[in-house]
Length: 454
Image (cartoon, rainbow, N blue to C red; front, side, top):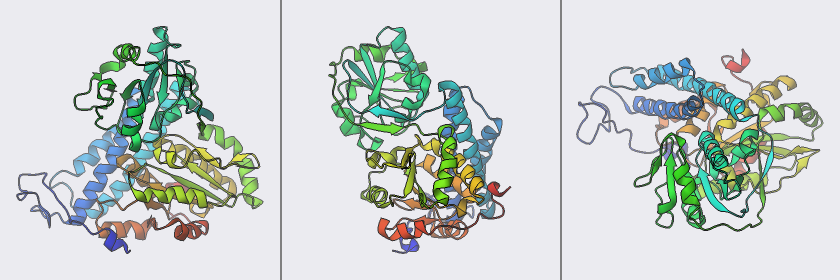
């Protein structure tokens, strides 16, 4: 199927000003805005939402950056009515969004490491422990940390056990979080299956950020939200005061000890960079042929089978680096090692793509190549704005040949998508069998204006 056919859709729908036609302007704006300009404005808005998400998490830990804050204001202002009709400037601002998003990810990584300690690889149990249970979902390590601290202060670490879900899984790798005895293991997979998985969890559930859905009746009376999250009819915990949640958990049925498998997480540039000399040697010796970055969001789409299949087909002389919740579709396999180097490394949340960028840049330096000349292929799945912002960061860095799926973004018109394809060789996934040979043959140069060539 051609890109044009995959991107066929209503050209635009704009209703942001009083000049809008009834039902919104759909063919062209009364102001003179055309569908491609509208598409670029939407693309910018979604990108800055992603930047805002990560900056929020850093900010609540006390880490601030005036440049990021000003950019968010400038970028959002640029999408107002009758402010900017210059498409070229919007493309430049989308790439600047990538720059600011990289800055936000770096700031958040600094906040996490300095607050909770540098991550280390860890095996996380997926069984259960004796005691009452609390399940924490979302992205907020601060919320998880405050919960664990309060359980300890109440003297209940032997009575109440805490489980991570979805994007809180990587919290186990941070020493100051892992040190709490109440933290036990991980329950379930990605956000996509939360209604089924929460229904089976007998304890209390806390939603901390996005990727939390309106609850089913089976658990609607034992779910709370905190921080940025909110659900209709669900109690909200202000200022991370979890005493009501802990007391509620003591009234739920005790969970029995059960055995389960283990999931490995916690790879980070601080613990992988020391391995790079050996990785370089193995690449030069032909023992590591290719490195695949296969990550991103989980999506309730049959096309997500692409990523499961691709990870099965990746040659055994290749390594897979991953981050974000899409990994739950393929992170329980035993991928083995290549002379002691793990073939599968989970770096954690979606923002931990920052670690992968640091590692790739250092690998390029040691091999005397730029990133596009490395034997590295990037294959992303996207659900919403944080993944969009990550894509913009990779484009800002001048990385070409990125594969995205499971579908093309609806907010991109055919013309805008074609411009990104032309400038960055952006690819839509087809089938693993068709795409894999192209990925294995990847190798080109960064453009001269990439920040990585400076």
